[in-house]
Length: 150
Image (cartoon, rainbow, N blue to C red; front, side):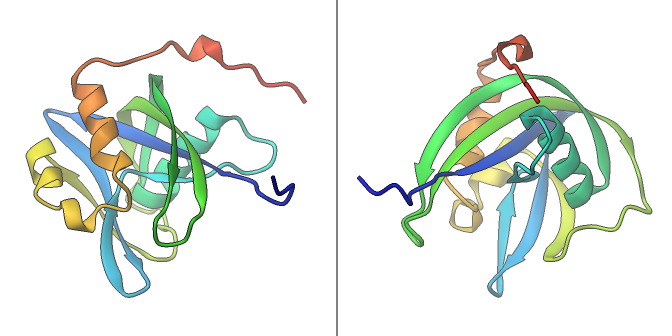
């Protein structure tokens, strides 16, 4: 076993409003890809803080985390990178039209579950629709399972 192997710690947020889900269209190597607001955990922040920050940076939406949907592990067949993804459910609180979106973000878009499913070939990973379906089916864990120590 190689000691140099480290999974990438990522977060994602499933935000539903009136049957539509907040999605991000982004340019990845010239392709228009769809994802939930998602990104990497940064030093000094909790997983929930990372999900809130990434959602704001990628969509302009301030959100409130309600619960954890699931922890997932996935290895990208394109890069062999391994991801440990914490996916949270939350609600949209307010929109900041002046928020500068991250580089590569084309737009934030609200889509139904069926619209997301119709774009399977454009999803960043299979976890995107997987987590929407878990959310729809009521999978949740209270956030009090998390501890953070400095």
